[in-house]
Image (cartoon, rainbow, N blue to C red; front, side, top):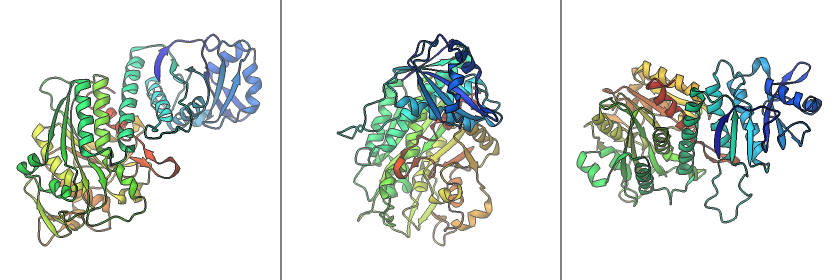
Length: 495
């Protein structure tokens, strides 16, 4: 799907579908400014149809061959109450429009949403979220099906009705690149673990390196053992799939400027190891590499838009399987940092691969480090499937991420990282245990990681509740690629 920006007249726009907004008012539906102009050209035909429009956010009404209008179809989209129209309502309206367009035979559409006032957001925000919302709605993962349920949507191009100013052109480039990155993350997450192995992730990273001329290094098991990554290697012992430590570098910023480092958890399947998980919904543990997928997606997006930033992506990738050689509860390992860890639960494996990756990240002298991981079920209990858990040892960094998350509408909620919780990680036999018990499970997991990031400006994103959906809509969400992209750009001064 291609997007473009063009100044259009609602009455004269020749398109397969003209998309216009309708507010819900006290006396019935109210047309937006663009819809009013179209209604004048149609001599009141749109206003006559308003009796069939609820104005409820995301609701739609399709009109065909309206006299006086050049468009083949008119799609009226409910925006809700004008005085309550803000970010969430805008995104719901985009989603409603996109879902309606999927079912049409139109090959192109013109959307008059850029002028809408979504709270205090500028038109560039509207444009970004229009593109991202449309691309998300049209995303399909059916490449492994021999019989497709339905043909692919016909819509191939979308014109965003607006003056093509420099900020809007830049927003369009960012939005398209971000959508491509999020789609990559979703596809990697949706692939089954017999296809998306650690080696597969490494090859996907190599493809990105070739396509966008990125620097890449892939460390093998022997390299990790030689370095002393005892925690990471311990997780891999029960699997026949060789582990990979993927390092991908994008250098679009000033030479010598310190990079931002993203560290993504890449457990391509998590059985829990010897601490075996229950069988129910275990298939969803293919999504346990969503942190890795989001790092690859973010780097793809930044490279595609040629962002003026330096970013290093570090992905420890492996499986967590039971077996005769697998780590056992009670085993003690020595991490790359030299600290020792008593493994009380082999299903708390994400923090074991991340702790060595965080220590490794320090060699790049990063300006900031953000790790992204489907780390704890406790975070799902705390925040559900709406917000990502945010932990940080630097409040300025945390504030930057929170602001970027609000901008991307890929929202986070900051959780405590107080010293009081560290006591729960006490071990009688090693420097620390890898679990702290049921109370505040997401907090103690972050506290564990913080012990390996004490010399870094570091933040941790627990995406266990936001990386994928279950049930009928089961599948990867591609989060938090939009957040990561916005954070890096804002960090570089591109607000």
